[in-house]
Each structure stands twice: as C-alpha cells, then as structure tokens.
Image (tube, rainbow over all chains, first blue to last red; front, side):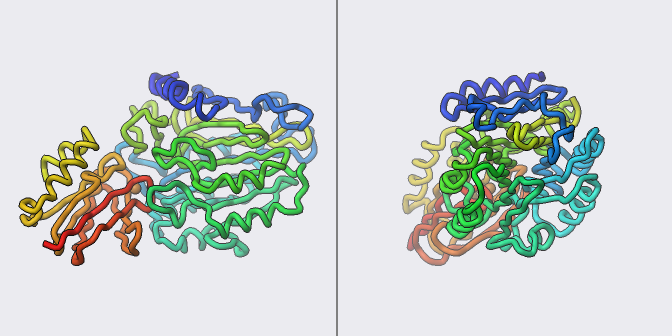
Amino acid sequence: MTRIEKASRTDQEQGLSRRTALSCMAWVGTGVLWTVAGGVPRSLGLIGDAAAAPPGGSTPNSFTFVQVSDSHIGFNKEANPDVGATLRAAIDGVNALPVRPAFAVHTGDVTHLSKPEEFDTAAQLLGGLKTGALHVVPGEHDVLDDTATAFRERYAPRDARGNGWYSFDEAGVHFLALVNVMDLKAGGLGNLGEEQLAWLEDDLRGRADSTPIVVLAHIPLWSVYPEWGWGTADSERALAALRRFGSVTVLNGHIHQVMQKVEGRIAFHTAMSTAFPQPAPGSAPSPGPMKVPADQLRRMLGVSRVEYVPGTAPLALVDTPLIG
Amino acid sequence: MTIVRRMAGALPGAALALALLAAAPPQARAAGPVEIRIDNFTFNPPVITVPKGTAVTWLNADDIPHKLAGSDRPWKSPVLDTDQRFSMTFAEPGTYPYFCSLHPHMTGTVVVTAE
Ligand SMILES: [Cu+2]
C-alpha cells in the first residue's frame, strides 16, 4: 500500500464508516477481491464467495462483465495529462482477462466537456474493448450541452425514455441504466426525477423477487458524502422499489475511488476512474483531481470485473488497478 | 474586494461578513470590475453585493470545469474550463442566487442594489 492509499483508508475509517457502515474499503496493489457479502443470511442466496465462484466456469449461464468509469476524455491537466493512454491501458487489461467478459458497462463521464471530438476519441478507444455490447450511462460531464443530445445519439438505445434511461436483460439479470446527472437543483445532489422514478417502479413491477438486478448510475445512489454532492437526492424511492429483490447490485462512478456498502440485500459499489483519482471524502478541501506522483497514478486507476453465477451467489466484484 | 477574496479561502464565515460590509453604500458605488473566483469548488466570495449595471465576472481557478446557473431565474453560463471567465451585467436590482449545474452543492448569491 502506498502512503496515499493508507491515508484515504484512515480517513475513511475515522470519518465515514460509523455513519454509513461502509463494509470495506481497501486498495491493494495487486487488485482487491470484492465479494458482495455483509452478514446477509445465506438462505437468501446472497452470500457469495467470489473466490469460490469460478469465473465463467462450469455453472451454466454464469458470466462476467466489466465496469469502466470516469474516463474524462478531453481532460489534460496535471493530475493526468494523457487520459487516452490510461483508458487504453484499462482496455488492454480487460482484453487480457483469461475469460472474455460478456459485455462492458461504462458508468459515465466518458468525456470531460461533452465535445464531439471527445466523444469521437472515446468511441474509438472503447471500440477496442473485446467484450460484447457496451452499455453506458451519462455522467454530468457528458451532458454539458444541457439536452444530452450528443450522448444520447451515441449511447442511448432507441427505446430509451426521458433523459435517456433504459433497461435491458443479460442472461437472466435485469439491468437498469439510470440518468441522475440532469436537471440538478441548487444546493442539491444527483437527481433521478419523478418521471424516471415512475418509470423505474413500472419497469420492476411484475418481475420476480428472485430476478438479480443490477443498477447503473453515474452519481452514487447512496449518501457517500453529501457535502461534496456525492449522493442522489431522491434515490430512496428507487431503493424502496428495489428492496424486495433478492440480489441488487448498484454500480456507480463519479467519485473516482472504490467504495462499497451493503444495505440489506442491496450492494453498492463505486469504481475507480480510468483518468484521475479523487480524494477520500473530507480528506481534502475539495473533490478536485488528486495529483499523485506519476509512478503512483496507475495504481489509483482501474476497472472492476463483475462475476455472476446463477443460483449460488450474488454478483462478486473484483477491482483491478491499471498496475499494481 | 481584494481583501474579501483573500479572506474567503481561509475563513468562509468571516468572508461572508466582510462581503456584506463591503456592500455598504460607499464601496458599492465605487463600481469597479468585480470578480468571483471559483476555487476548490467554492465561489469566493460566496455572496457579493454590487450596484445595478455592474459587470460581474467569474473566473474558474479549478482544474475541473464549472457551469453557472440561476437558482430561481433561467440564466446560465457556458461551461467554464480552467482559467476561463464569464461575465454578466445585472441591470435590475434584486437578489440573484446561483449554483454550479455540474456540482449543485456549489452555491452563491449576487445582490444587486439600486444605486
Ligand atoms: Cu462545478
């Protein structure tokens, strides 16, 4: 562990853990094995041991997918003058996995300033992913044209609703791709909005409690650190509609660091950025990009791999830095 | 205003008080260029009082973009990347709360006086 990583963990323990019951937060150079677990009864089929779940192994319908986040193509400041190179390294890492992921998700801030050329560069790089489909939800940096037109043209499926939210199914897992970065209110946090919440409730209605659910959204759907806007104002109504399901995994980005929390049967996870790290909550005057020595940067950037094995386990998450 | 800005980084509460003091009529009439510096996801000073017709300029000193928007009136700035400025002249007296539409926890207020 580097000094910075230790510092962030200490801040975490002192500052937040008691209040938000974060189950775990750690950085390890060689990658952290995350299991979605936290004292939940095994009979509910929620406790999984990722180590015991052979990725893409003998279990039928098991699969893995990867989460990439916060690539900020267009950013060129001191914290990382070459975000294209680090995204490329992340993609190379994904492509080198022993088992090819079924698909990839990107949890937003694909670009830094929503410029057409940034979307072009990002698409070119992400096109190098040797996975199935790429599913993307927007970050606030992707919708700076206010209407999210550039983003939607690129990434929203034709049947997306409202500001571009949609759902899809992969191998029996139901995915909700949400937009919580638009129509933000003064003094507030991320925002789903009435229309999207009504759609979400409607989308989940009639689905069996046993359906595994994965929720994608850029800004965390749990209150990570409201002082920095790290939360979603109206997420409680969405979570209320999700609580009856046996396995819910919420994948977020935005905060450029790994954090995890388990609340009942809902596991929350935030991914590393591929562009630059951000400080642990409250450990710096602002959430601005963290400047770390060049030889440490790639330890603080990375991707997450998600393993799903039907019937035996919830989704298991493995966070892997670009180098370590 | 320089003093106010310097104070703002160190002591937001004091800066607010000073900003209000600075708005007392003698200073307010001396309508020079007024600049609000965006630093560490904060508007410095967070509250500023100017006579009507004053051009207020925001400078983004962060290495992350920000974008201003009126909280209760439909005005907005373009995206301000690092070191970019945006100016707006407030013609009508009133209180103009605003925020950053990317980081809505960032809020500020421009108070425009009649004279
Ligand atoms: Cu901002």
